[in-house]
Amino acid sequence: MFGQPTSPRIRAALAGTLSAGLIFGLAACGDGGDDESGSTDASASAIDCAPYTKFGDIKGKTVTIYTGIVTPEDTPHIESYKPFENCTGATIKYEGDKSFETQILVRARAGNPPDLAIVPQPGLVKQLVSTGKAVAAPQEVSDNVDKFWDKAWKSYTTIDGKFYGAPLGASVKSLVWYSPQEFKDGGYTVPTTLDELKALSDKIAASGKKPWCAGIASGDATGWPVTDWMEDFMLRTAGPEKYDDWVSHKIPFNGPEATAALDAVGGYLKNDAYVNGGLGDVKSIATTTFQDAGLQIIDGNCSLHRQASFYAANFDKSTKVAEDGDVFAFYLPGPDANTKPVLGAGEFVVAFADRPEVKAFQTYLSSDVWANTKAKLSSGWVSANKGLDPNNLTNPIDKLAGTILLDPKATFRFDGSDQMPAAVGSDAFWKQSTAWITGQDTATTLNNIEKAWPK
Image (cartoon, rainbow, N blue to C red; front, top):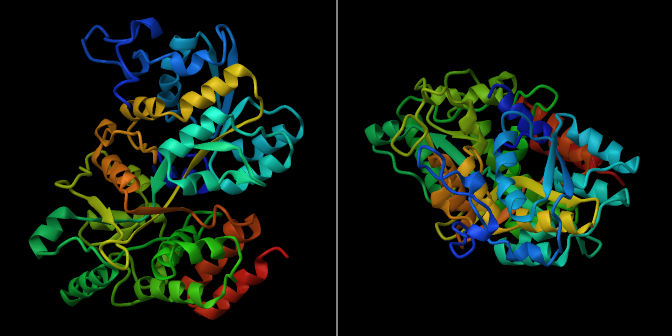
């Protein structure tokens, strides 16, 4: 979800850091087209206006959208709205605010919300719905989500039977960063199963090198990278259905499934033979910032670093991030080559008004047309919209993430801690994970998190 720094976790990560029949060439929809250099400007391209005529004449109307996406990541968002503005004559008023997550609740409760908000966590969507100010999404948006997204995405913002928010951008967390040159020189191959990942780790360790580097320090959010590790392994060792039950607390946080998952993570992060390349022993993970940890790959001190697609922003601009570059990433494999669990995150568009112009803009944002327009304008952005052409993504890591998200075999699940109550997901889970890294045993760690779950 980078460059979409909307949640505290995501902002921390940047702190050290078409459908052919619908799009282009329809003169009735705008003057669009080429700039003076002869290149095509995605923000000026004409689009098919037909999907928006059903909302009536909205020329001169204004739609406000509020978000935590701020400069410079706001520019491609604002540019991506221009085809809709050209097509309909409506104006989109964009407001980015680093305090979005606090202020959106304040504004909703005070009866002064924006027309639309870009919300980074399902848990926050639920809080906004509980204020009574959020408005269910129109049928056109619901239909788009049914058409363009895996059904899991719709479930995240369906509350008490009503659907409130279409997905927008996404990030893939199930990635392992590595050096393509080291793999070539060492005769290593990208693993396609968890067993192969373990065998690769053992092979690198046998060469005298610590295969893994990791860091979980992130200010007040220290510990969150462990939660991602655990969620990835919960998906792989327990399966998506049990993962859902665990996230919703239908099964206990400290049950056998969670115990097996955290122990599996411990096989990597608490293994002195595996970590922490270039940084120290296991305990050094707790004091190393997650931004710095993966940089050890470039220095040749470690070989592997598990971190999300947004981690690309942490490498120096001179670093080539590509399959034939200085560093790249591969999909964190499942239990077998045909099972593709994918952990990720993303944002959702939630409305607080149901005026025709608001519904029309929501419909545009939930379309394949917008996804492809936005992709052409952004680096470090991807969507799970099935109408997205991966060729429109602008850099190799975006294309990798897009390919993973759009793989028909992929089983996507949203970051678990982002769906849990705050007392668990952004408090006990983080703190107890840190204690676990520094020596606390698995049972005590999971028992303490279970006790934090609201009754």
